[in-house]
Length: 419
Ligand SMILES: *[C@@H]1O[C@H](CO)[C@@H](O)[C@H](O)[C@H]1NC(C)=O
Image (cartoon, rainbow, N blue to C red; front, side, top):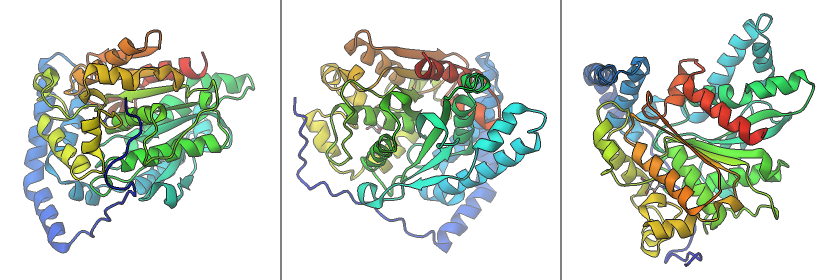
């Protein structure tokens, strides 16, 4: 199989700078928000809520589901990127607000004293010459004390910036992990810090722009002195897609991304993919089954795919040569086996979790099952959660709850970091 990838054009990756938002666009957006959005948001939230009720599922988070469904499905990437604060700004506000609330109750709640002392605005910009675009690591937790690191790849269809819910998830599931508290009480090391990657969004950066940035971030963490065996990486949705690309890159270095050579006999501790998006196909049965209740639907996936892949460098070459960095499930089974066989050489285990109410369920399950099939003995944990639709761990975190999805994530990561 050809692992030397030589596309016809040279591999100088370029980013398309975003044009500033014009007054006309702004007026259009304001009109939309005032006259169309309220009714549409009401429609989507009601629909998701009622669908959940009729399926006998606790419906509250489905209200949020409906709201996201409106934004992702009916606003353009430019509108969303104008409306939502960018990742860095969102992170800055989040740190300030979480620190403030934790320090106010620090005297009563010991874990809040811990949180207040570990959160600070800490951004490491990745070198422009290797990644291009706008890429940085935004730290959640104190990297100077941390012995365990999570490289976090946020989702949002590659078009939405990192949300506060992602950062709360990182805080709750990793930094505040009960095992960390236990080790601290015993006076032992073992703190976790999360390196949240701020990557360039589409359509400014297309595939494989984000892979370049993710690979640079991982290389940076290794160079900073953490051992591969103390690092876990993963993400949700499009972040799960990027996770799978990065796994492919570790096995078969992508020519446009920084090569990562793990020391002999060492591997990354684990990788996780929450509600991962691993196929361009929209004819999976779960699309039909859950298209009404989930925050995503087929049309949306098709649109996002265009923003990410239309004109993307090398993508068609990849497809025709059966190379799998971008493709994952869209390869036939045999090619998949060649591509992802031997995963155990680069990573210690894989965690895939999907909601039974989401359209991406079938592809997530199929991905986990194929990985199992071609990697006998390699630990793959697959959770199918009956009450969840897409990315519920993020919604749980957004409403400040240690829900089932957060607890399962803690359980998995605990087993990986402290076996
Ligand atoms: C990432 O998503 C794109 C768009 O759907 C898809 O073409 C690709 O196969 C996905 N990549 C991986 C590694 O799953």
